Amino acid sequence: MGLKTASSLSCILRKCVPHLAISHAKQTHAQILVHGFISNVTLQTDLLLVYSKCGVLQDARQVFDKMVDRNMHSWNILIASYAHNCMFYDALGVFDSFLKMGFRPDHFTLPPVFKASGGIGDSYLGKMLHSWVIRIGFEEYVVVGGSIMDFYAKCGVLVDAWRCFVNLSMRDSIVWNVMIGALGKACFFSHALECFRDMLNEGMKMDSRTVPSVLSVCGGEGNLMKGKEIHAQVVKHHIFGCDVAIGNSLIDMYTKCGCLHDSEKVFRTMNELNLVTWTSMISSYGVHGKGEEALALFRKMKYCGFQPNCVTITAILASCSHSGLIHQGRKIFYSINLDYGFDPSVEHYACMVDLLGRFGDLEEAFELIKNMKSAATASVWGALLAGCLMHKNVEIGEIAAHCLFELEPRNSSNYIALCGIYYSHGMWDGVSRTRAKMRELGMVKNPGCSWITVAGRVHKFYQRDFSHPETEMIHEMLHGIFPRVGDKEMTTKSWQA
Image (cartoon, rainbow, N blue to C red; front, side, top):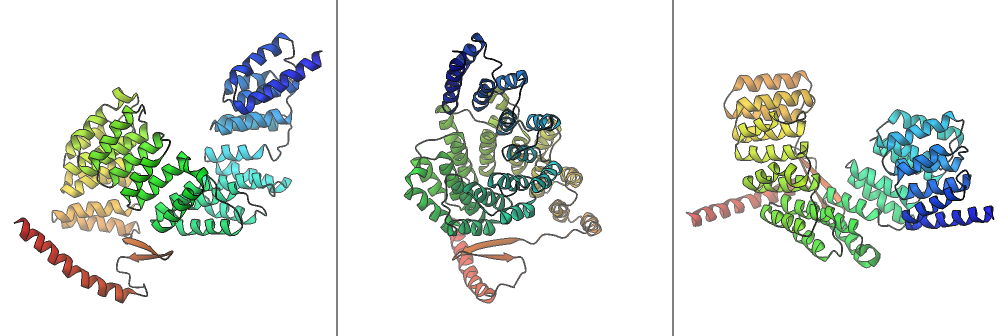
C-alpha cells in the first residue's frame, strides 16, 4: 500500500511540472508529509524538480538541504535552476559543494556551470572547466560544446567561441543562433550574415530565436534588403507572425535602417504588445526626431496599463533630447522616483545632461552631475563635453574633458573635443598643449567612415581614402550634385526672404 501511494504521489508531482501547477505540487507535498514518505529519494527529487521548474527556489533549496541521499539528478536540478534564474553565484556555490562531495560532473552538469561562469564574467573558471571537458571527453556533446561557445561569446572572447563552433562535429539550431548572435553583438555584421547563410545551406531552418538575431544584424549593418527578405519569410511562416520578440526585432531593424513608416506599420499590425514593443516604438520616434509622437505614444502606453521601466524612461528622455523638448524632458526626469518608484539611473542622467547641454543650460547640467548619488560615468561627462563644444564653453568643458581623461585615458575623441573648444576661442596654447598630450600618448584621430550595401556587398568610405575602385566616378557624381544642391538652397533662401 505504501509503495503504491508513493508511486501515485510521484506521478502527480511529475504531471505538475509541465503545467507549473505549484498549488497542486504543494498539496501533494503535504500528502507526502502526512503519509510519512518525506525520506523517499524519488519523491524528494520530484519535489525538487517541480519547485525548481516553478521558480520557487527557496522551497527547492529547503527540499534539497533536507535530502540525506542526494543523487546526481538532484544536484543537476538545483545547479541548473539557479543558473536558469540568473542566480549565478548560488549555482557555482552548489557546484563547489558537488565537487567536494566527490561527484564527477556529467554532460548535464556542465552547461549550467558554463552559463554561470559567463554570467559573472569569470573567464578563468570557464577556461579551467573547458580544459576539464577536453580531459573527460565531453566536447563532442552538442549541448556541452554549445555552452562552452556561449560562455566565450559572453566573455567577449570571440576567437575561442568561433574555434569551438568550427570544431563541433554536430551543430543544432541553438549553436547556430549563439554564433550568429555573438558575431552580431561584436559588430561583425557581414560575418554574422555569412554564418546565417551557411546555416541555411547546411539544411538548418531558422526558428523563433534565429530571426531576432539576424534582424538585429541587418539593422546594425543597415542592410534593409536582407531585413525585408527576412520579414517576408516571417510573413510566409504564420507561426512567426504572432511572436512578439520577432515583431519587436522588426521594429528595431526598420528603425535602424531609417524606415519609420515600416516600423509604425509593424507596430500597428502586431497582435500582442509588451513593454519592449512600446519602448522600441518610442525609441523609433525619438531617433527620427519625432519627439511629440514619442510623448503621445508614451502617454498611450501608460493608459493601456503598461508601467515604464528604466529602459522606457531612457527612450523617452532621449526622444525629448533629440527633439529639443526641454520642458517635457525635465518634467519626466524629476518625476521618475515619484511616478515610477525608482531612482534615475546613470543613463537617465546622461540623457538629461545631453538635453540641457543642447539648450546651452550647461551650469544646470553641471549641477545635476554634482548632485548625482553615484559617480558620473563617461557617458554623462561625454554628454556635458558635447554640450560645451556646441556652445563653446571653456570653463565647464575643461572640467568635463579632464574627468573623461581619467575615465577613458585612451579615447582620442575627448581630446579632439577639447581642442575644438580651444580652437573656437582662438586659444592656440590650449590646442597645442592638448595635441602634444595626444602625441605623447600615441593617439591618432580615428578617420570618419560611412558605408552602403549594394547588391549584398558592403562599400566602406573613409575620410581622405581614395582606394575604392570607382572613386573617380563617385567624385564626378558628387561634383555634379553639389552645385544643384547649392542652387536649390539659394532658391529656398531667396523665396524665404
